[in-house]
Length: 45
Image (cartoon, rainbow, N blue to C red; front, side):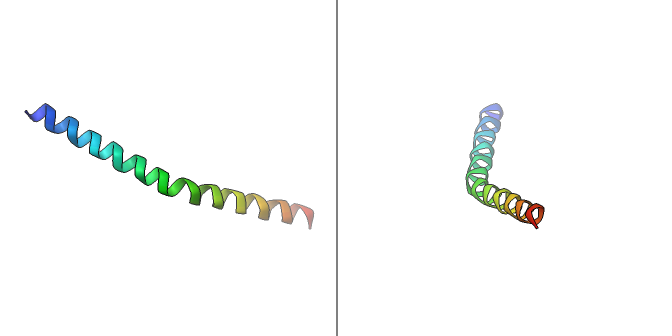
């Protein structure tokens, strides 16, 4: 019984982590692209 509960908890934790990554990935990509654009602009100046 305890092993089954642990596996269910792991699945819930993994699902939460995946959901957080799906939410955060777009923001990370936007931040990286904006930083890259700023570095490009500074190198042009």
